[in-house]
Every structure is written in C-alpha cells, then in structure tokens.
Amino acid sequence: MQLYSPMSTTPKRKSVRAPVLSSIDGLRIGVLENGKLNAEEMLNEFASLFVQRHGCTVRTLAHKSNASAPAPSATLVKVAQEVDFLITGLGD
Amino acid sequence: MADGTIFERKGIQTAAIVTHTFTRPGDAMARVQGFSDYQYVLMTHPISSLDAQQVRERAEQALPQVLSILGLR
Amino acid sequence: MAVVTQREFVAEEAALGARELMEYCYERGWTDGLPVVPPTIDRVKAMVAADRRPAETVIAQHPATGLDLSLHAAAVNAVMAGCLPDYFPVLVAAFEAMNRPEFNFHGSTASTGGSAPLLVVSGPLTDEIGMNADVNLFGPGNRANATIGRATRLILRNVFQMLPGISDKSTQGNPGKYSFCIAERSRGNPWPLLCEAQGYPKGTSSVTAYAGGGFCNVENHGGNTPEQVLASVADAMANYGCITLGQSVVILAPEHMKIIGDAGWTRERAQDFLFSQAKRSVEGMTDVGKYRDREYDTQHGDGAHALAEQGFIHRGLTPQDILITMGGGDAGGHSCFIPSWSRGRGSIMQHAAIKRS
Image (tube, rainbow over all chains, first blue to last red; front, side):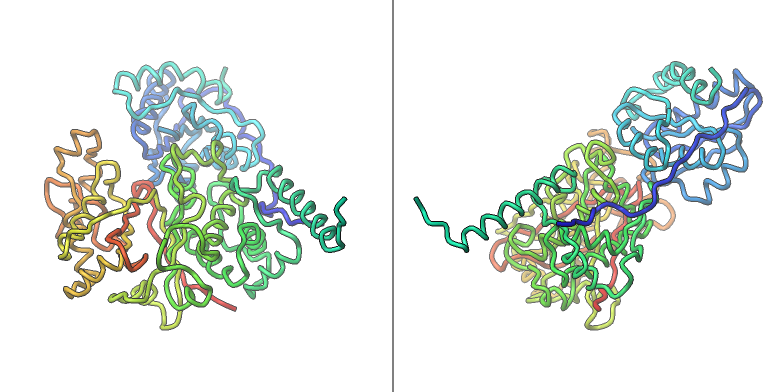
C-alpha cells in the first residue's frame, strides 16, 4: 500500500559559506541584534573590541523587532551593502 | 541563525552567536538553509541575566571563536 | 479447536495491515505521539478535492526555512489527523491567516514560551461540519474540533519541521499542542459573532488563529454583576506569570455571559473593563523582576490608550487586544483566559474567511 509523505515538497537547497576574510583590519562590521535581553550589549562589546584592536568601524546597527523571524529583507539588503562582515545573535 | 545563513548566501562572512541550549535548533536551521556544517560562536546559556562586567568578560573570552569563524585563525 | 469463519479471517488480515501501517508512520517520526491515519493516495486525493485549487498551490511559507506548505501537504497531514474533507477549508484558512508576518508562526512555535495556535471558528460552518461550541468546549470527543487542531500541529511538525528539542524549544509546552480548536457559541450569545464583528459578509464563516500559551480556568459562582465576573477574569489576565503586553482570548461561560448580557454590556464595554482592570503596579512588576522600561514606554508613550493608567503595566496595549466571546456548556460559572505568546517578538492574532468549494 502506498502512502504519501507528510513533509514539505519544497526542493532542498545547497549553500556554501561566504569567502573567508584574510584580515579584518579597518573593515566595516555590521551588528544585527535580535531584541533579546543583553543581545545588543553583547554584540556591542564584540564590536568595540574589533574597533579597539583592529581599527574596524561599526557601520550599521540594525535591530530586529522580532527575535524569532529572519530580519526583514529591507533590513538585510541595507546592512549587506554597508558592511564587510556581520555579527549577529540569538538565544537568551 | 536564519539571519546568519541568509547573509552568508549574500557573500557576507557572518559570526552568529548562539547559546549552548539553542545549538540543535541552530544546526537544524542551518541544515534547512542548505549548510551541512555551519560553524557559529557558542556561549554558555543564559546571557539575559548577565551584568555589564560579565557581558564584557564573555565577549573577550569568545573573541577567538569569532575570529576563527571569520577565517582568521 | 475454534472454527475460523471467512469474516474473522478477513478482519484479522485487515487489522494486521493497519497495525503495520500505524507503526510505519511512527517509525518515520510523522506522528504527534498518537497513532495517525495512514495517508493513502485515495484518502489524500479526496481531501485535496475539498479545495478547488491545484494541489501544488502554496498556502503558507516558513520565512525562517523557506519551506512551503502546499494544499497537497496540508491534505496529507489532515488525513493523518483524522479530518474529513469537509473540515479541510477550515485548516486551509487557518494557515492562510497564520502565514501573515504579523502572526509569526515560526516564533510562536519555536519559542521557549510553548504556545500553540488556538483556532476559533465562527459562523454557520461550525454547525454544518458538526463542531462543538458547547459542553467540554476545549476537551476531547468532537471529531472536527479534535482533528482540525491536530492537523495544525502535524503540519507544523512534518511540513515545517518544528520538532521538539530541535526547532521547537518550548520549556514546558502546553496541552494545546496536541489540538487547540474550538467553535464560537452562537446559541444564547447576545453579541455579534466574531465573523460578523470581523467584517465578513453574512453567511461567511471565519477562523481566528491566536498563539495561545496555555489555558486558565476562571471560576466565579458567587459574582452576579458584570463587574464581579469580569474582575475575576481580569485578575487571571494580570497574574504575574501571565502579564505581558500580549493579546488575550477570553471565552465566557454562558452563565457568566447571561449576567453580562442581561445588564446590557456590549463586547466593547467588557473589553474596556478588562483592559482597565488587568494591570499590575510598576512596583509589583519590579519586585518580581518583570518590569521593563521599554515595555512601559511602549504602553504609555505616543499613542497610549486613554485607559492605560500611569504607574501600571496593563495586559495588552488596547482593549481591542482582548478577543472575548462565549463558549462552553450551559451549566457552570467557569470562563477561561488564554494568554498569548510574546507580543515583543511579534505575534498578533489573525483571522481569515473560510472558503468552501
């Protein structure tokens, strides 16, 4: 007897990571915090370490109003154009 | 985690900070986004109740992980 | 030695097949812990036919993963839940409502908060498909209520892979995660039904989806004024374990509704009362570690509702955040309050018309 699978029929995708960085000196950091307690504070600490030690600039601070959904695409597009790498955070 | 993988697909190296209780959902999300072995920065849960000094200390401790994920070590 | 009749032999063989199919579904991880109806081709085709659109039509998408819910996949899970084809339009409308970003079905399902989508079906369809709006409203026993709610959970698990411990991080979960679907009671209801209040044309039924964090029974057998009855509801809404800026669902028992309706109170007056009374002082919130400047500013800043009292955190942002209607059996002073999942993370109840072929 044949049964249909109850799973999604969306085609599976294969992704690769972005190219690694050779140096971060002087690069532009994007910070995307997820609105949970201390997320902004933690990511700001990382950002300030990069600023102090590697001469980075914090180019954009983008806030997610909803920790549990991907940042809206307008946010993503804006941040992607202005940064060389991103730090982001989830979980309490 | 979804944000991290979305930025990676746009060609931006991303260091996602994940607390240890969320590793399974983080891994599951990365797999669904098509990444078979997505690396991220692991921190002890919780972060929400840390004071400012503790946040600073945690960031300092985790910095090598961040640099490693960005491909620098 | 017993003589095995032909009928017993056929029955035994069929029973063995059914058990194997049941175990097959368990082994694949397709169930909610209870046995499911095996989704055979014929059963799924009959279910999909309840919606005239092509089976591959996508009715919801999970932004976090990009996974789609097609009518086909919804039908497979509806079969597994035990739905009849007549129930399918309710399930489809529920997911079309939950698909809106404002509902955030990913967040409300993945979160440690453990909410489950509560579906409140309103309108003539509830009688047409035999839903329960009466005795034991939230309890088991009615096929439509039980299986529509169950299909919702099976879809979240199987299609969107929101699996406990993996992408469902509920600390405690709640029993509504098995099934959480009711019909709004029209018999004896002095207020416009939700489908009418929501603006749908006469004769159109609706389903309201709400990320419900649990169930709180509100008992009051001594109160005999609207203020007394609703004060006990407001107190439940404002308990320190529940009070947030989130929305609320209140289902009034017919006994309580009679007191409120006979006094001439409208739904709006009841909402205003509940909003104004469901509050905790800033000192009290601070004492239990739940006070947040950001939340106070949101509630009392620009656009603050006139009933929001300074020095207090109210439940919700406006009285319209409280969905209130009637349901349950004729006897008993037992209403209920369903707290929401987090508003801060963005979950606002949504409704949609139920379209039948």
